Structures are given as structure tokens and as C-alpha cells.
Image (cartoon, rainbow, N blue to C red; front, side, top):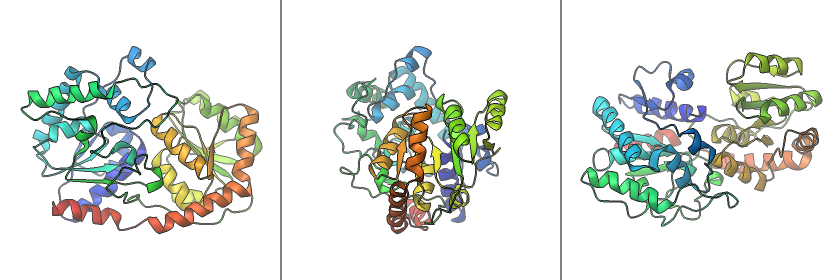
Length: 372
């Protein structure tokens, strides 16, 4: 579970609580989310499926359905078990309403039982009227056939006495769907009827890049290139980094290379004001902050959503994907990040985003949800 999802749910949970609601959080990894949800008394673990090693090795993602397949939709028996587990959560919490972020199996459990409000990345909220989910990376083969996934969902629904799905995207039918991201990050923008309401988490405001500013990084140690890229950057320019799941040996190597490591996630809105650029994997939360402040981005995407986000940043000329951890590639990326062209493009995007970002969007979303 990415930290942005915890930030999103916490922001919406606070807004619901301010309206007198009792809020329960059901998250994939309560340990990873503890930094943000530590004060929440009702935190449950979400049902999830862990692919086998063989499934993981042959997995590739071409469209969102491939991700659904890897999360259990590939097998009707696995999907039924997940839905039954969600039934148990619903029975325990007894919600009047479910706010779902990236939880297709939960939507099956809620069907004709509990009203659903869909939030989160536009990437995870395909428009329900789509006949087919569009390919987001043309070069990748699909792992799962979309019609087979829809059939598996239909088998589960029919067993529960409900009408089958006519198409896979139909599972995203909701009382309200509100993508909580910048509209530029919506891969379904040309087909969407619902409007992206923008980020509901607090973000910074546009600011000029200080002279001789350091870089900052927000990365994960499970990506092989992370250590090498940070080392290459530190040899050329000072910077500080938060790296998730970093081993003691890797930590020492980075410190010896001159990387200043921080123990906890940085308040990005504040850190970016003092930074020349940011290095990250392409997650929406970090990207929202970088775009809002107006900083170039060096990207090391790990999966389909991040690869799509990175392609948007590259198209906006406000960042670039680091092609490899080799010295020449890092040197090229560094020169681009410090150059006037990328800096000016990032500043221009920040100006556009500042007009799109509504600080009251979260409160309005909650009001709309409660009105249902």
C-alpha cells in the first residue's frame, strides 16, 4: 500500500469525522499505514491475494484489468474467497456507506448491499461505461483476458443471486465516483464523464527554485536502481533521501557515498520549496506535491500506474525517466533537471495546477457522499 493512499484516506476520514460520522479504515497493510492512521481507533486489515511466484514471474500489465487479475480476479474461486472475506468486514463494521479506493473485490461485496463512493487515482477508476479497458502501455503484453475476468466476476455475482457483469468496467458503477488526482494524470480523460476533483491532501504552492539547492529523493529500496542512482547523484550534487525498507548495509553504503538519509517520510510540501528537483518512482502523491510546487522530477517507475504517470510528466517536459543507473544516464538526467527548459516547464505546470487544485474539494466530496 503506497503511503499516498493512507494520506488520502486519512484526509477523507477526518472530513467525515468532522461531520459527525464514525469512521473505520480497512487497509491492505496496517503496519505501513500506521504513521498516518495511528490515532484512528478502528483500523482493519483488508482481504488480499498474494500471487504465486510463477504468477508474479509471468505478470505484465497492459491495462488495469491485468492488475485486477493479479489481485485475484484471475480465478473465480479466489475472487469468491476475497468477496466472502469482505462480507465479514462489512458485517463487522456495518457501514452506511463505503468509500472505496482501489478495491474492485470490495465493490462486488457491496453490490446491491451498501452504497459505494469511488475515490483515488483516476487510473484505478475506469469509467464504468467503457466496453473495453484501454491499453496504457502499448509495448507490454496483457497477462489476463478482460472478458475472462468479467466472467469470473459474473460467476461470483450470480452465485450471490445478482445479475452478471456485461463488461469488466461495470464493476466500477457507483453512487459517486470522484477521482482525487490532477486531471493530467487521468488515462481515461477522453472517455470520462465524472470530473477529477484534484488532490484532497494538502499540497504546496508554486515557488521559484533556489540557487544551488540540493535534490531530494523519495524511493523504495526494493528497486535495484535506487541505490545506484542515489550514489551517482550524491557524487555530483548534495541531496537528502527517504528510502523505504532500506537494509543496514545499504544504508551505510549510501551514507558513505554522501547521501543524507532521513528516517521518516519528509513533509514534501516544505522540503520541495528548498529543493532543486525530486527523484521518485512516479506515485501520484509525490507527483501532486512536485507539480504543485513546480519542481522537475527524475523518475524510476516500478509498475503500470507509475509508468503512465511518468509518461505524462515527460510529455509535459517537466521531468524525465532515468533510463538506467549508469553514470552517463544519471549525468544526463541531472543536467536536464537542473536546466532551464525542464525547470520552466515544471513552473508552468505549477501555475496551471494551482488553478485546478481546490483546498475545499475533500469537504465538498464528503458533503456529496453524505447527501446520497
